[in-house]
Length: 215
Image (cartoon, rainbow, N blue to C red):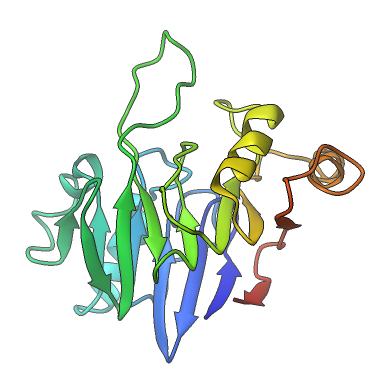
């Protein structure tokens, strides 16, 4: 399986000529959703859910389908009957030939004054990849590559480091990093590496937008 980072929290998974894209949002590369056979969206925040990009992908190919939670599905299902699927924690399905499990229910708390929204995470191909969305959800199953939300208004480094140790993946691949400057990225890289507290044994990897890695 090849994983390509498409900016911020978006990744493209390709295997055997099949393509699955997770969270093509407003901070992603402009072509993030193009050419996908299946789309997954973790929640409604615009850095994960760009309605225009999803509609463009669904309009371009009538075979493309979307799996997401109710708050996103309600905005698209009427225009694409039978192609937008509402899923929640505990559901399993196949998308473009990839096996997917759904874990989690709620977005992490940003501040008590802000309403808390729903959020789901996706484990792909038996935990080969896990994308938690905007939450530190432990899927309770082995994970090879954890897509790690390194920086957000709702988290801090100590929580994220402990989360990697709790899930205990083979590697943690940085996502949710568009708000960091080059200096900030360097600091996170040091702290997640051998010069800092580290990850408890998981390799820490950061891809620039457009870079790929074979899993």
